[in-house]
Image (cartoon, rainbow, N blue to C red; front, top):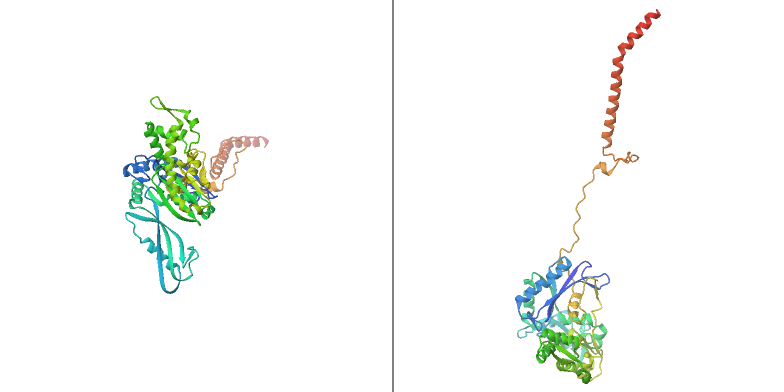
Length: 463
């Protein structure tokens, strides 16, 4: 775990923007956000995958530079999230049969893990392995209870999280090109699940759906274990493009109208028809037309989401939890209920993870889009800046023996400061007394002859 004074920096390569954030762990375990910066990445990243390495490198450099200016520090390393269209899970099963009863040991479990890691996927690599249950006969046993059991045959099940080979390599090249090292590559959907879902929700069963701009990521949990991870190559930006094409306006104007007037589900079409909306070039449309475009695209996205979780829907006691900027649109819950035709529990995450606190000088838009990068920040445990030390104090001059043992000030009554050392004062006073005595002596020696003459004359008269 990071020390209190360590500063952690996280980087998210999202489709619409590249974001960086810095925070510091507080004594109570919460993470205080110290700096935040983002820049448009529409020409750099496509569906979560780096499309232009040079532009991405330059954007990362500017974003991390902005963080460094806010902190007054130099960023040396960052935690980076992995996501995007190519990320998904694959189940793998390994069976073992023994000639005689064998006791399961940690070494045997490690051998099964190594065998699973050795599986080769075309143009893809294994990023993470999530052990599932082991089967002993017809009985499913958690991996925590299997060591020490006597068996003749067994079955090990693993969930491999894989992505295309170039995903991590391109990210590493861009971060290194920006002058930083990667502290750790984190799988964003896993960190998001740890930050937004409670242990009870994972245990009782739930689906976490992150509805982003170009992709929608679905994570299914039961018995506190991840069972499925899939990425759908569609998101809220598809609705923006539909609006721009149908109404013949620019994407920026379409996005603004979607945020201001958009609804994922529209019940009262008659009322919406009377609400006139102004378009560019002195044109207009009505709210019902806009919402019909949005509703059609959201219906398609949510049908794809339901197709991925319907098989496990009976196990999802805690329902479906939505996050991401695309899920913040009005009447989103009603739109999903129209798709699954069930009154299952549906929750849209509002606000930030509970372990995040803000400084008064730092602003982060609370629109659901930053939950992914906040979850990356919460998982950091290494210092990511250099010069993260207090300035060295200048050495104070050593005191002289006289300064260590000062003589009491005898001039305090007069208000004058005596700058002469005591020894010098004694010498000067002695010299003054000698001069006065010498002067008196000289005066006496000068008058002695006269006094002697007068004395002799008086003596002669008496005789």
